[in-house]
Length: 154
Image 1 (tube, helix red, strand yellow):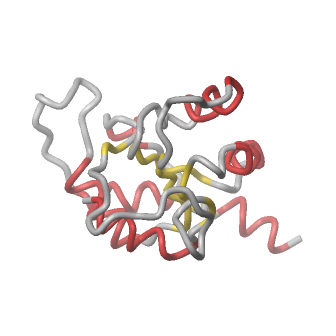
Image 2 (cartoon, helix red, strand yellow; image 1 turned 90 degrees about the horizontal axis):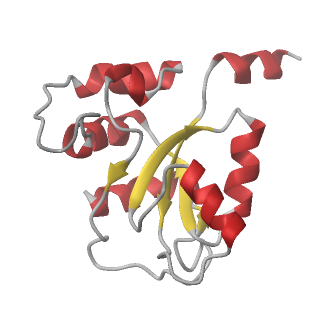
Image 3 (cartoon, one colour; image 1 turned 180 degrees about the horizontal axis):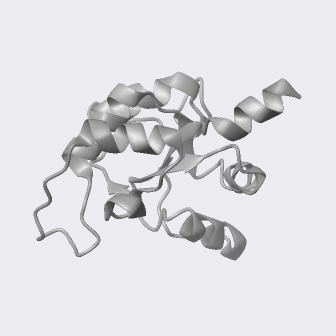
């Protein structure tokens, strides 16, 4: 009972990165990726996995994405380098990445800070094995190693 309360109080933030492209994707998988705001290759979204619906969505698309627990340092760097204003890329934003990262860890959303709900990343330096599941490739649950992948994609 105490564990359930703790899970509801503290959101567990997970970074989700789309690895596979858009060709030959089943309709239900494409819709799920769209709902996760992963509409193109190498897009990243931050989600709270305390919501059971999100967990089910991640299981459905695990062969197309890489996901794992993001730490606050990597989240702060991701926001600082790749965050975009809701008005578009050309609008320069002055942000305090540490404050936004702290707010996200407390349960706020990127929209509360007037930022887009996703990040566009570069292809990873030194490449990835994009057709194999996690210990050998990057697909599926990468646990803490998602932070290393994000660092290579910034």
